[in-house]
Length: 116
Length: 116
Image 1: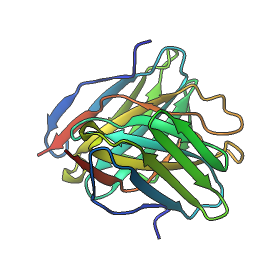
Image 2: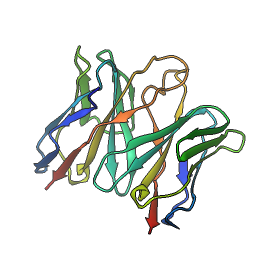
Image 3: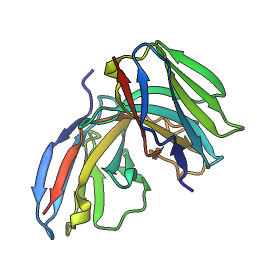
Image 4: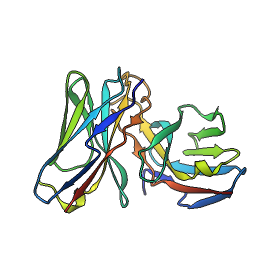
């Protein structure tokens, strides 16, 4: 079982719709979660970070975290063709214990296509 | 504020050679993490440096090494290159308080290494 798993996709949504991206994690020690967007041929770009249970909104993006269910999601409202990219979910432990310094564990990514 | 820079952007090497990649973090960031990204394995953590010290290391052979300088710039070295080392090598910088929850990481553009 991979430590961080994402719905494999690809996910295709029409322009203006809500895109829902999901991620589950197996390490109960994970405390911080991040969503990155990666365009083809480019490096990952940070979209959102979430540390507490519940929702966190930033513009058209909403991240949701449920630590009891070990589940993280990203909703993109009013999807645009420019949102077409691979979305990466990453988790990290806290600094306690010392073995987590600087380490993000990534899922395989979900390819999102927003068609006009 | 300038972002993370990496040089060179592209490299072509042959098996058995060695290579050195460079990363300059965002000004004021003291933590640099390195990742390898391949289509098959996704993004995998190599190591992290903070204040010239390696604090964490991923599951890669000893051919992969790195260092950090007093100005927080970091280099990674791969010796005795193998075909399987062909990948996008990414560095990410973080403010890294070293306490509590892990900080957000911001990626550079990456170095695309091709081993022939």
